[in-house]
Length: 495
Image 1: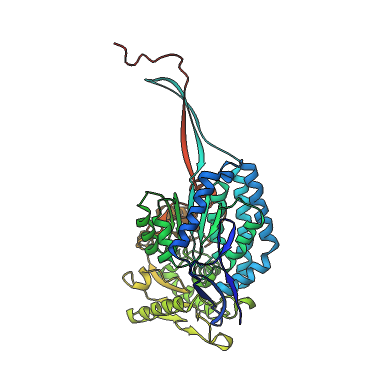
Image 2 (image 1 turned 135 degrees about the horizontal axis):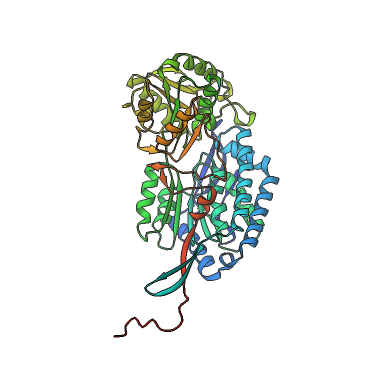
């Protein structure tokens, strides 16, 4: 059976790997091959870098295009995405495993992201400063300029959306890009680049290179012709990216792992806290960097809370993502095995598995990569399932008795991406949120994300921010321009 074959997009053309090598893509719901993609080499990556460099430094068309015209193109891209929501969502769901309704929401969010940056780029801002110093009267002002050649590396859990989080602001700022989607999930990226081609961006401004991190990612991070690299994924790989970027001290943006606390006080609304706790850890099969994978709950509420959480968790529907169950499969066999390994580690460590804890193989799910949503009670801070990112539908439960203890437990992690507090006491909510060392926090909810608000973490959860004004600034350099307002010579060297 012949399958769709996805090629690289370089300098305005669809190009296969120079070796002709290809890799298969698997539908995680049934283990069947659904497509192939170009398995690119270091040399292929260098070709993409050269195209982006030529477009930015020699051709300069996009770089020199005024902001309103760039905005028009971004609005065109958004409109094209909106026309193809159903098509893209179907492919995303088959390739990634997320329920179809979640994939549809991702495509709509991606279109909104292009619209947001299209609007933002037409609102230039900077500062003007009149100063008087030893050199006389000066006027100083700042402008924002594109960084240059930007390499963008994205993960498999939100293939389209997290690509757009990087592509939209990078293009809005006037950069040229080399985009590397995850080797697990490049199918929606193919459609996105078809759209980028159709709207008529200058050749070389947008390039897509497919292949493994050891070839493509390493070449991008170490290249002296790349001015910026941004990566979303694991902390371990992010550290490798940062080490490679030292070659020319390129600008680096990293959105990395998390082991985020969900702190629940006894006075929280029970049903609301249970519902949000499920969204925090089981949405997108738990394959979310900001997942609330550590429930830290006041001891007096734990028993009634866990009874309700267990009931709700065991009622979760699991199945073919195209049929819109509550949960679909994990992205790959390898990742499923990793999650199952952590579940076995938790059991050996002495945690009490009160729900799930196994591969789900009922009915049509027999050949897919499904894991039953899992709850571990009686967890201690030293357990690996408490300390390490699992990136699946697994949540741990710990208890506290005082507010100070809750804060200490929340911050007892090397990560600092996200966190939440549930309480009916507004003052306590703000006190605890102020103390949580994380970049994204919520009060009485979990996981809502907005194009207008910055996304990123503290500590080993990364560097820089995506989305919002901060997300645009990541792809800009700030230049200071000074004008001498004092006529004549200074007389500085006169005796």
